[in-house]
Length: 435
Image (cartoon, rainbow, N blue to C red; front, side, top):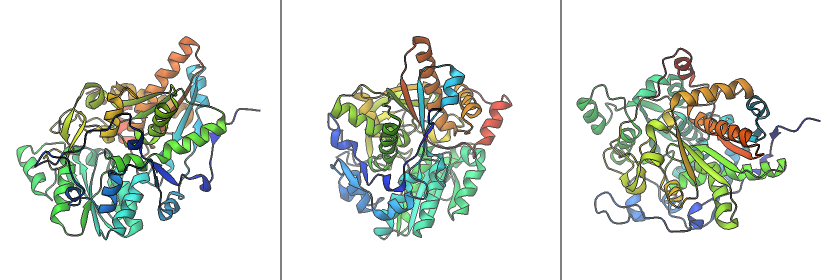
């Protein structure tokens, strides 16, 4: 009988807790600093843009945080997500490696982002928030928050990086279908957006600019709070249901990963699959290699500096200790819009500094070549962001072929690419560059 290639859990197996990596850090992390006083931020400082219950979660020292039943009930619309063994890809690469991928593209929004959008909307609703403002790059986050706001009866306002607004129109339509208002950033909706546009009418936008606009919107509109799709600790923590499910599913397969791989922009989907395995490295001394894969054109871990920096372009956010290219960095117009961010999550940055994770960077053409290889063997068209993880996985599998090593490789397929077909069209027509 053929080996099973799919490992499914039942709804009762949806994790009941999120895992908080702060509890197991071998060294304490530097605190975020107030943008004005440069002193460690207090809970009160954060309340201007976030509800108190999420601020408490951001600063929580506990190893595990209970997932509310209302959130688990909505997770059950698509969770647990499947773990699949990529047997056809293994055969095409002629590798002895076993390749597994966690497929987050089965969510209603087509990516991992609802894992945090749902609880963020839930906690804001509890706190009396009536309206959420946010930014989005490629649109996975914006569409996920639009869905979550619709489910909890909140108004949603999204500032979408202008180049992605035009590259990925169907993402905008998804957000509008779920009732969100979507604006290309820099926009005419905020003072900062108008300022940037006046200085450069052709500005393609950046996540840093869009964050500045969303925060300005938040502080000037009563009943509004800001919602972030990556970078912060509570966001990364919500994503750890991915890795926790993987641990159950790989146990069903009788395997333990030698290498865990995830694409990385701000850090959320990587944290989701990686942090439960980082805990095993810290507490159980396991030798698992954990690899973050970023775009060469926006490579904060492999080419950035570890220092305090703002999360946005205007300098409204707290200063965070992170690997950064500089908050005024203007990324190239690559199609992996969700990875076009100047900085890295402080938790991911700290783990990289401590040597608990690795990082590699790939050019855009290599990434799309790998995406097509995966689609032609496994059938799923992957998102450009997720395809960075595929590129690194293929390289690991080829190394295993050359060495004869029978390693187990696990990667996070964080979303499908069915809203990204203009990107694939650019690749097939030869209009894609490595810029």
